[in-house]
Image 1: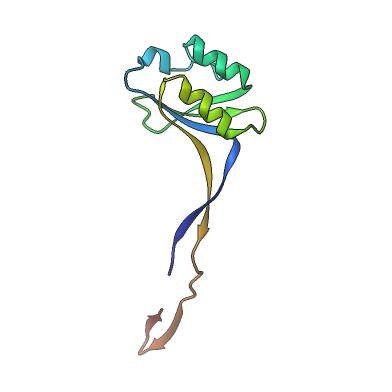
Image 2 (image 1 turned 90 degrees about the vertical axis):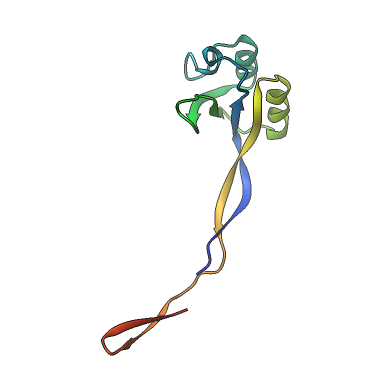
Length: 119
């Protein structure tokens, strides 16, 4: 059997961001589904028509989020804007993974009442 995952493409309306540990938790927790408690970041979100903010990753640290935008965007441009804010440890596209590899079919034979599996 073979299992693999390849990166096909990325969502054109989503980013994954992780706040730097130096950014206080009071700024990292969203005030609403579209706003953090940080004016500079909220302006970037508004300008890019953010649709929702979803907590991801470590729920206790509250430092990693998925940012969903209303429509497809130039992801490279978005990444640059969010990175330039100096608020984030990383800003990445949300890649779409697909299964890869070769489908394996198991063959078996019945030997003395037991199943023998052949690869």
